[in-house]
Length: 322
Image 1 (tube, rainbow, N blue to C red):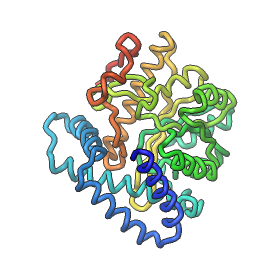
Image 2 (spheres, rainbow, N blue to C red):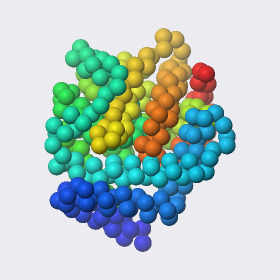
Image 3 (cartoon, rainbow, N blue to C red):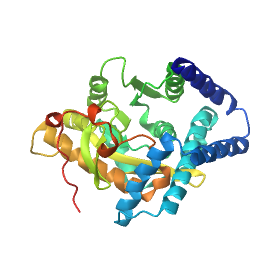
Image 4 (cartoon, rainbow, N blue to C red):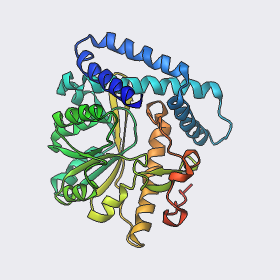
C-alpha cells in the first residue's frame, strides 16, 4: 500500500507541474486556496504539528503561556494558505518571467549589497533560511541579479519521482543541487564551493539528518541544521536570511553576518553561532508567522527520544541573550 501511495503522489505532482502551468493563474490560485481550506478543516497530523509550532511562536511573541485558541486557528489557516501559494508558485516557476521574479522582490536592509560584495571579493557566502515564503523564487532572483549560480542541498523526497521533479526544476533555474542522502555527505562539496568563493543557500531551521545542533528557539529547546559548521570550517560569511510573501510580491531580509568566535573549541563555536542563527530565525518568524511553513517537528519535546543523539553526543544549547 505504501508503494502505491507513493506512486499516486508522484503522479499527482507530475500532473501539477504539467497542468498548473497551462491554466489561468487566477483559476489555479482559487483551486489551491480551496485545497488549503479543506486541509485546514480536516486537522490532519501535519496541521496539528503546524499549530503546535505556531503556538510556541505566539507564546514567545506575547510573553505568555496562554495562547488564544481562535487566534492560533486563524494563524494556522493563514499559514496553510501561504503554504499553498508556495506550491502554486513552484509549479508555475518555469513559466514565470524572470522580470517578474526580480521586480517583485522587496528587500529590507543593506545586506543585499553586502552579500554581493563578499562574492565579488572572492569570499564564500552561506545564506541560511527558515522554511518561509518562497525560497525557490529567492533563488531564481539571486541568480538573475548576478550571483551566477549557487549550491544547495535537497532532501530526497519520496517518491523518487517527486525528488527528480524538484531536481529538474532547480537545475533548470541554475541551482546546483546536492542530495542530502544517497550520495555521501554533501559537506565536502559545499566546503569546496565556499572556499572557491561560491554561494551556498541552505534551508536550516530543521534537523534533517539527526546530526544538527540543539538551540533555544521561542523559549524551548529545538534542533536545527549545523550549517554554522561550514562557516567555522571554511571562513565563509554566514548570513541568516528570511523570505516572506508581501502582497502579490515577495519580501526578504539578509541579516548581518554571524562571525566565527575567536575562542573556544570547534563544537563550542558551532553551538554559539547556531544559537545566534536561531535567534534571527525566531525574529523573522515572529514578524511573519503566517509564512512559516513548518509542518514538521522541530522542538525537542515533540521529537521521538529514541531518535535523538545520546546526551553525551549533544552540544549544549547556549542560552539566548534577553
